[in-house]
Image (cartoon, one colour):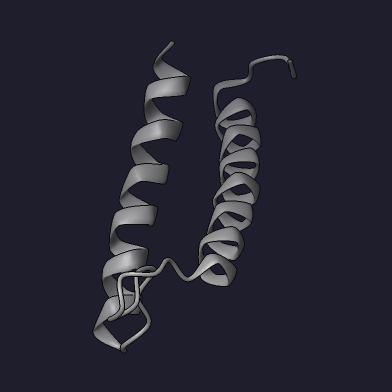
Length: 68
């Protein structure tokens, strides 16, 4: 349970600050016309899943838990 909370909290922080950083340089998931930038959203989603998987493996290694 604690592992899930750690991974989810870390992914939220990465997502929140990642979107904020992209917005600072002018890249936003929702354009000026109100349309969603699907290419950006799909790439962010895939990146977050990959990062979550890697973070989960790291937490498992650090806590000594067996792989699920």
